[in-house]
Length: 127
Image (cartoon, rainbow, N blue to C red):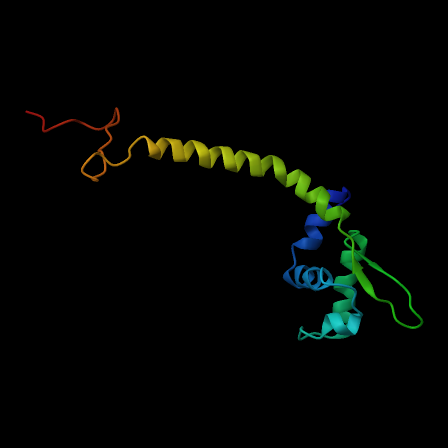
């Protein structure tokens, strides 16, 4: 059973329908009927998706007379972004190193790429 908050958040985000619902809620509150409109599924099916999002803390439901508008709750997304930041730094540093590596073999004065030799390449034909 998934128990930590980050796992629950990523599990909720794993479904494209739930991600689409969150994208819609980023522009403001919406009812279940409004959220269901773009999907070819029943209201109970959309409600199940909303329960997963609510359990993950990604949405909350208010009460306005008989309406229960849904709204986006960003805190779990911020926690996920914080966790991803360490990997974002790693990727950025890796790409920087890759750029430096390829930058060493830039074009020569004629505009032609400078050939690189490595220890496993032979220089010239062997006799």
